[in-house]
Image 1: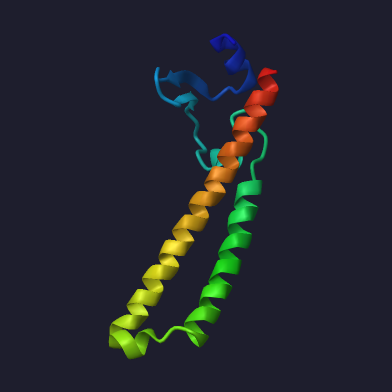
Image 2 (image 1 turned 45 degrees about the vertical axis):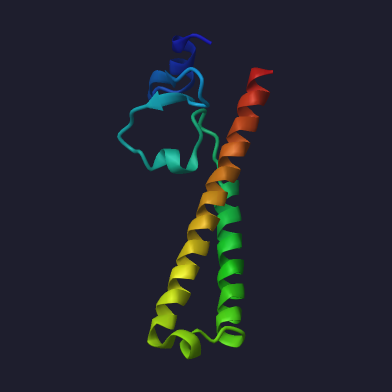
Length: 119
């Protein structure tokens, strides 16, 4: 597609970033409302599946880890008062992984839409 076609599809489009030999192949947009692109793709479609996945996975993992920390782990006996810090750091790590997985889900779905649009 020509750049004018991308501009017709999205008025925020200003350039295309492509680095040969890598997977970097993305449109560059400039807007007054960057929050819009947190929930929408370049073509304006909403991308909430990854958000919903992250939310469900995060709530489930938090509940399961809370249950584990309350019933099975004995961090305070083994590590003393630093045990609470260890529990929180593990929970933060699980939270980060969950958010990254949600972003990956969105990325895969956007890539699949891009392939469908190209076909």
